[in-house]
Image (cartoon, rainbow, N blue to C red; front, top):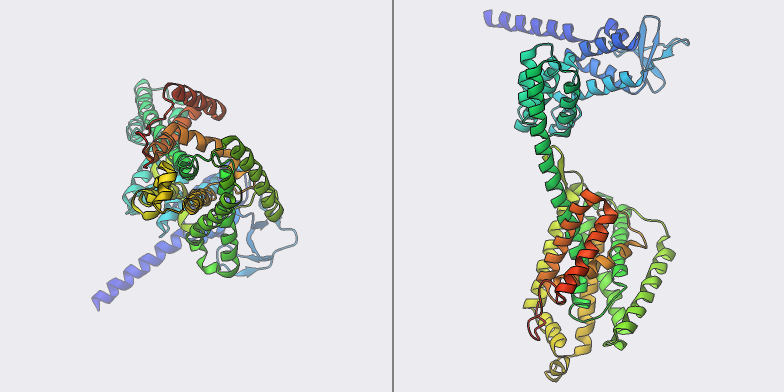
Length: 526
């Protein structure tokens, strides 16, 4: 009996606390009507003890779905009015006016909504809310941040909330709190922290606090600099992996077969458009399995480009072996024909290829360094293609025949090798790999008829720099040029970066014509 009485007392106390925190008509009116300062103060007070109705009303303010008439406030939904406190439908007078929020008020409303999301059960929602509050400096939100900090169980989110708390305390009137906040913010690697410290330095008048702020700022800038460097390296590896995919096909058609194929970029374009077609088929016939369309697109892109490459070799290239100038001119003309064919079928405008959901987003490594999933997948894909090609050329019967024909065609023919068929297989393989490059490129940009033109020159430079016929040299050259280009681009801009890389390659080839890795004797092995 006594235990039941205690439980009833606790329940009554909980209900009383709930009623104390519930939205009241006076709070709703104070947030909707009046000067901006008064409304912001009322908003912060409501957020500090918010319930579901308070959150819904603040969201309605954000959506411009609130009207006011006299002392009455109405939330509008589907042209009907509702009482924000009870949720009951209410008649809206004809003279009711829309609640107007200026930019400052909207910023405070967005900040309040983000703060309320700190208590979501979804880690992603809380993470996004913390990210939007990293530059928050309003001390009125400190009680809510403290409450969220106490309730948070995810370590990295708790650490980020601690940084938000420190940024707010940085504007405290208490000197000791400002010193503690400056010391805490020195461990942050978020670019918003740098902004907060700079803003505080402008108004800080205490010498010791100012010195602490400057020390924290130097530490944060050093951390951000490392994030920029690592970001440039990753961007270089990402660009290098794309160049590698494009150049791997050329490593066969040009490096092994000696064919200057100016239509190689268009073979890559065909792979990209094949991916676009597969995407459209999945959207129309298999919408529930759309996330897997890219897996189906990989063999389709390879097959489409390989078939076009085989037809090109059988119809044109086989008559031009040993005549590089004629081959260059013929394949250049074919590249123009393929571009026009694509324009006729798909139109001259770029088409969009969507990322599957598992390739959206990225990994947040540092405050200013995020690694997108689509780029990470492309890097991994390039490695798989590289390993597959190395195995095919070095360990299979087809690879043996390709190397034999390349090294000494007459002797290979005398040994019973059908050299014409091997030429077609090798050219189709190089073309198919170009199609895989197009499939990968479709995930990081738009697909258009001119897609291949932006990579054909760079891919030739990769093959020549790495050493003709050398797979290892192609890898080193692709990654090296990608990283070098991104570092110079961050320092001097994209145009000067291209010029600098080109000058570097010219000088390198002048000093070492055979490339990074020279062919040993008459060997054509990869």
